[in-house]
Length: 131
Image 1 (cartoon, rainbow, N blue to C red):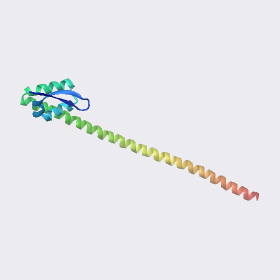
Image 2: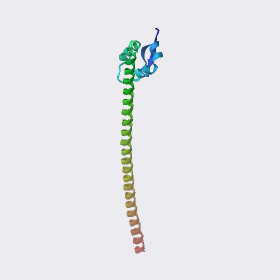
Image 3: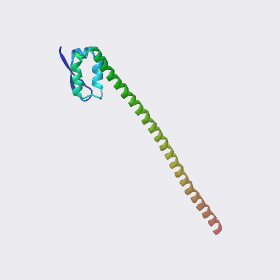
Image 4: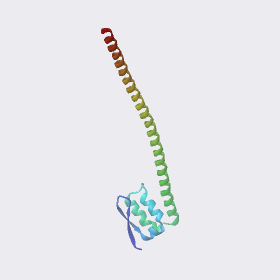
């Protein structure tokens, strides 16, 4: 049985995966590489022990790794939904804040314009009275 060294993901860790394992259990090799619950040493252990495991043990290992992946996907999905809900809530609050700020600025500008109009009217009346 020839061994094939295969790289894992982005961390470039080398795993020694027997050809028999790579050919017979490609789905399991992928699950083992992607699991978050194993160290690299544990991954290598599973790659080496797979050829001598019983079919029942292989089925159980596959089931455990699939369940883990499903649970993590479910948690990720719930996290994304909660994050979106929070972001939407803050987006609404931010929009309300911007609207309130714009309203206050417009009100301040209108007040300044009203004071300027009043002053202009008083200046015109003063000129008419002095003429």
